[in-house]
Every structure is written in structure tokens, then in C-alpha cells.
Image (tube, rainbow, N blue to C red; front, side, top):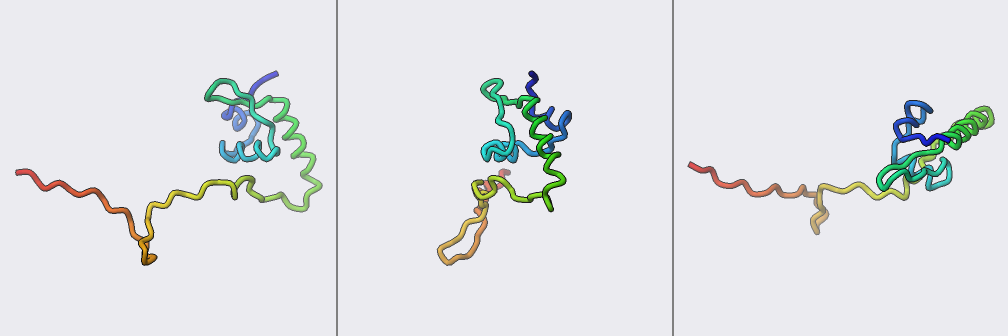
Length: 104
């Protein structure tokens, strides 16, 4: 049994998904679950990834068009806004810090 790292998913298996998209697929049950290697590192069992790829290849002739649904898009947090709305509804940018007076 071999554990594949994120980089090996790309280089050896041709799975060019982002880390976030892979996590979304795993949470939705559409990609093999990762195996914790350490506190900050995960990997995937090579046989499970190979089986997932084989299933994708087998589906190739059955689907009329590939699905373009983005797993987890609705569950993502909205992007942080840099501008703020005033009570009147006018969008304003945050004020920069004051510039110190020049020294002579």
C-alpha cells in the first residue's frame, strides 16, 4: 500500500484539483477520504485513487456531458470586503493611517 501526497496526486495521477476543491469533494463523498499522516499533513491511498480514476473513465461514455457542478461552492464563506457601506448606502474605502508630519 502506498500513500500519495497532494503533489503526487498531480504528478503521478494527473489529478490537478486545488486543495480546497479536493477537500470539498472528499466532504461530499465524491473523492477518496484522506489519511492523516501527521498533525499537518494528509495523503491518499493510491489504490483508492486508482479506483476513483477507473470509475471516472468508465463513466466517460455514459454521460451526455460532464457535470460542471462545483461541490461546496455554496458552503464557502463570502469573500472579505475591503470597502464598507456607510449608513446612506455609499461605498467607501477604509481610511489610510495618518501620515506623520515631515521632520527637518
